[in-house]
Amino acid sequence: MNRYIALLEDRQRAAAAAPGAHRPLRCHFFNTFFFSTLTARVPGTPSRGVNYAAVQRWTAKVNPLQAANLLLVPVNTSNQHWSLIVVALRSQRIVHLDR
Image (cartoon, rainbow, N blue to C red; front, side, top):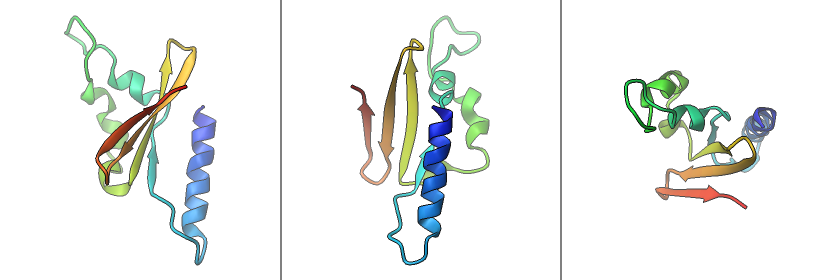
């Protein structure tokens, strides 16, 4: 899955660099570990929550909220099923794509 995400990132960069081409939406692709790390149990708490500190360094170099139109977050459920969360920043919508 991470290789496919890297392929999508490469295609996006190539499309953006092409002269005279229509500029694609700027997307930020999180890797497959982002969601599971974000939602992992916070140390010192009895239950799962949102662990911002665990993923804070992943966005230290680039702020995806300023650099992208779409945030794409792959989600693995029980190591058996993949789905995708798409955060559309302009329209302020979050869509969970799952089949």
